[in-house]
Structure formats: C-alpha cells, structure tokens
Length: 259
Image (cartoon, rainbow, N blue to C red; front, side, top):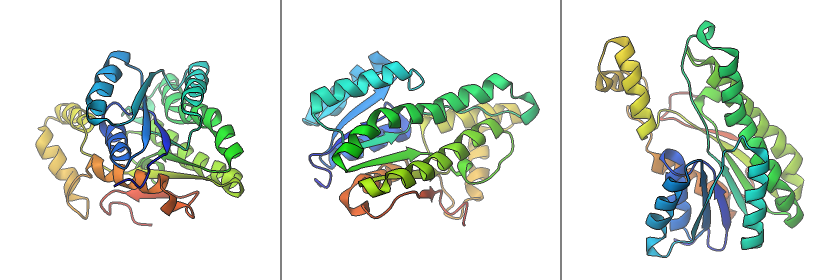
C-alpha cells in the first residue's frame, strides 16, 4: 500500500470529515501530507494522532481566504520538503436559505472560501508544479456544482464556479504535466452532515433520522456516501495511474445525478 510513496501533498480543510478521510488515505499509501485548517489546537492534536504510527504528517494553521498566509505556508513547506507533488482543495463552508433570504454577504462569504480559497492555494502551488512539469490538483466540489437545488443558491453558485475553475486551469496546465480534477460528492456521512440534518429537521418539525432516511431513499444506492470512499477516489486522482485524466468533475453520489 505505497502507491503514493515519496509524494508530498497538501490537504486543506483536512482536520475533519472528507478532508480527514483523504489525509488518512494518503498517509496509508505512503505519502507525506500537510493538513491545513484554521484551528491550531485541533491540528496539533490531529498531528499527534496521525503521526503515532510513524506517518509523515505535518500541519499548518491558516484561513484559505488569507492570501498572504497561504503563500507564506506554501513557501515554508517548499523550504522544508524541497518539492510539492499534489494539492487537495477541500476547505469549504455551507449555508442554506431561500434565495430571497440570502444576504449579499452570504454569497460573498461562500465565494471567498469555496472559490477564492482554492484560487489562493492553486496560485501558490502551481508555479512549482509547472516548473517541475509534474503535479496533481484535486478540488472537492459537490453535486451542487452540477445541478440546481432549492434553498442553497449561494452554495451552488460557489460550487459551479469551482467546477468551471477546475476545467479552465486544467486546460492551461495539461501540456506541462499537471492535472486538475474535481470530485463532486453527494450526501456524505460526516459529522457536518449530521449537524446540518439535525438543524433542518428541527426547522421542518421532524426528526433527523426520518429526514436522513427520506434523503437516502432518493439515492439509487439507498445510502449516504462514506468519507473513506471519497478518500480513495482522491488518492487515485493524485496517483500516477490517473496521469491521463484532467479537467474532469467526477460525481460520487450513489447514482443520484446521472449525466
């Protein structure tokens, strides 16, 4: 299980949920991983846990919307590692509301994190990937980036933008040996999902389990996706085996959206 041995990979928003599952998978496959997030305390605890068995894990604390902090952290990693081979843009935020209830600031806040956060990290890392004529970028988008849905227009706009960004950057970097792809997960069984469903269920006057069951009933596989499944797909896209795949936005949603 050393398919990624020798690779140095950054995972943003990697302290929990999908990002953590990705980081664990990459470490298990032999990669050296830097997990980033906003909570320094949480990251230090995570580093101690993940590094207990000798895994090559580092952490950096910054907000992806803070462009100078992003560039500084990437420069530190390059000085320490010597090279960067891959980037996973997982950091993101979510908000649900009817379109007329979204404030302009809501659109701006979601766009800043979900899109500009990815822009900042890609622009910090890409010059080095292009110079070495090799590298992988994986953006974690959403099924919300592939179709419309009620009560999450601001979120959908940001994820549609991320899918478009993935395609455009892929076109510009392909001839230089750098691939850029997006994963579009559907309903994923993370702590965040359970918290969101609990709030939505309360607002709807129902219970969380009933709401989750009704959502899973719409999915052909009749279940939520496991974070570890997204981790496995991300690891593949970062691996040498995915050298011929770029500019793709891959649905991983149990068959919910078929195109």
